[in-house]
Length: 139
Image (tube, rainbow, N blue to C red; front, side, top):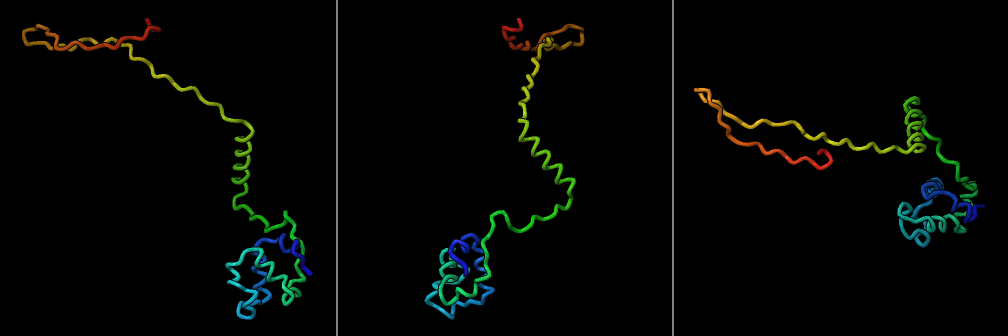
């Protein structure tokens, strides 16, 4: 006979499936089924299963071992999965070092003034270019 501890070791989905297999219906016992089985919480499902009328239908249920469950799917591409796992392990083992930020080079080239040459050969300065002041560490 199942005990409350044995039933508590199973997930709610398993308990609902067992009630469905036992063919218990809400219409048969309205006092026990306060709402639909799909809406019941775990403690309500266990109360239904432990009731004297239905207790003998669940004698086959054994204690659920925590590690046991559905077997994992076989990976479609095992080499790719193995590479991903190795990369994840490497990321965990060795933290990434931060790369130093690259400094933008200063434009230290000399810009000649803007000039215009007339037809007679004379040169006239149009506008003086403003050159940025260099930081003290470059002087």
